[in-house]
Image (cartoon, one colour):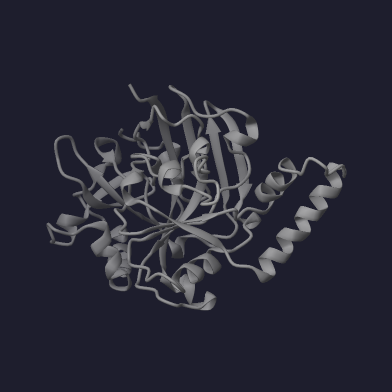
Amino acid sequence: MSVKPGSPSALFAGPFALATLSVPEGPAFPALVTPDAQVLDLRLALGDAQVTAVSLLEDWRATLPRLRALAEEDRTDRRPLSEHRVHAPVEPRQVFQSGANYRQHVIDLHVAHRAADDDRSEEERRAEAAEIMDRRASEDLPYVFIGLPSSITGPYDDVTLPAWAEKPDWELELAAVIGRPAYRVSVEEAMACVAGYTIANDLTDRATVFRRDMPQIGTDWLRSKNAPGFTPLGPWIVPAASIADPDDLRLTLKLNGDTMQDESTKDMIFSVARVVSYVSQTARLLPGDLVLTGSPAGNGMHWGRLLRDGDVMDGAITGLGAQRTRCVAEA
């Protein structure tokens, strides 16, 4: 799908963003996009026909000033964004996903799943849950699992709902994009490893999250989250320097025009830095990798309304633009 100049999807913070685009019948290529919805083909601008978003991120410290300079130049080889298809901005080698990371969301879950013999008021149960969240933030560790790059699709592509997915749901998330190798970095060092940010919608089939045949095993993230197209990503990577505070951004998701999620990343239990640092204690983060930071309250299970054929999801995060995806039932 192309984007019309001046549409909300063409706006972002800062002087430029990094995208992956294509023209009809042409291959995907990395591009510099400006806020006025103009595009510069980085293969031509950098004189490298093999350049990709990942290769740019692999040398991000050198790449960033070059992109800044290109954004400031008065060039005649820019083209309208509307002439291009927008793909996921990067093809990561690894995807790390944080769960149960929004305070209000987890409190809602705690209250909703009360024991049969719990006769306390909702106010009492919420107070208990809030105390648990505060203690978790100060004493515990983030909860992170692994996703598959093959689940990623573009920010305007249709999403196929598999026939086996009985309860497909949405989860809008802030995604940090890694810009340098990171292994066992401290919380204080973590943000220096983040090249920028983008939008992810981490779709989940609630019916397959837990294994019914093997309840002792627990969650089945492979089946519930990794169908092809279950992670719409983008539309672009906005450099970290253009985002004043990633822990103070507004996430909104609308379903067919109705607001379902509307929350600030201030509500995260663990900050971007803490999640990135935590992942790096076990895994070696690579340039282009994604670290998803969790989703706030307001998913389909909360509303009792899950995804179905023809639904349109509009997701936006402050300074990062917006994505629109339509759900299509598998034939």
